[in-house]
Amino acid sequence: MNQCGDANEWSGDSVCDDGGPKSSYDICDFGADCKDCGARPEVIPGICTNDCSFSNDGECDDGAPGSSWDLCDLGTDCNDCGERFPDICENDCRDADDGWCDDGAPGSDFDICELGSDCGDCGPRTHPGAARPGSVTKKKNDILKQNILGEKMRQVKKDLKKPVSKKTRPKP
Image (cartoon, rainbow, N blue to C red):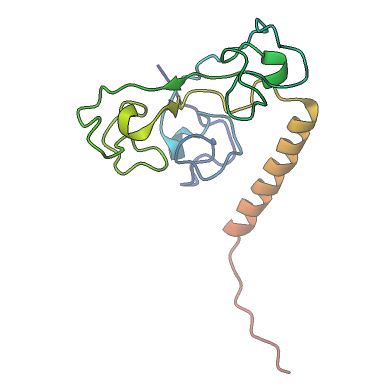
């Protein structure tokens, strides 16, 4: 199932702004810029429990990017690491394991297979419907920083759309 909406002020400006694959900006919710990004896969839920015996110690211990230690299973140290998302790693593309990465993600050689379907050549990929890291479990300061950054990006885009006046260079 896909999600597709245009509930943002930048929808229809020919620039994908939802922070997903092949987007130029990350200033609106994933799937909220359908006119420019196309339909996006439905956001999949992440893994977030505190089942690890090392959870709640102030250090991320699940071994994923950004963690301090590899002592817990993925997503089982949620209070320290935040919500985690499993990677996609299949070899069911017809051109899988041919020495060329064919899934179209950043760093790939070709875009002829579904994301994560050429794992032998591309390695594991993050599901495009996964919430972006921290987007579900942000702390207040992260939200504040994101709002400030988003507002600056909106202003930059507005400034880029303004017509440029031709001024003459002042004479010395």
